[in-house]
Image (cartoon, rainbow, N blue to C red; front, side, top):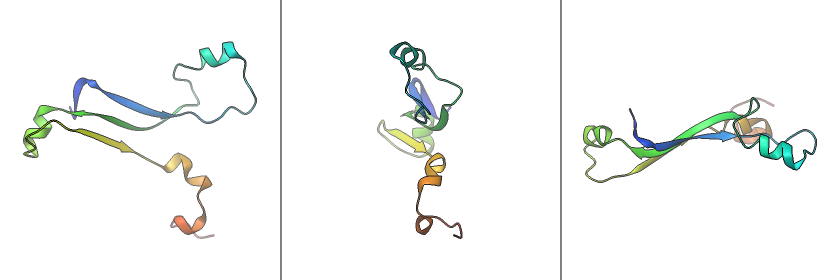
Length: 82
């Protein structure tokens, strides 16, 4: 395992709703929903990982992707042709 058990989290992106929602619906939506997109993970590195890379102190790591946000990026910031 990369992360210390119980000391890691998954990062989700929730696109804004197409239309306004009620307070009750917002509470229901607080849980992971079908529209949520997993974009990364973060957590405290497992002691075995620290030892393998000869890191002598506890540390955390974060990894995430920006792909879900790519459609909003100007073409000059991507490798895509206009």
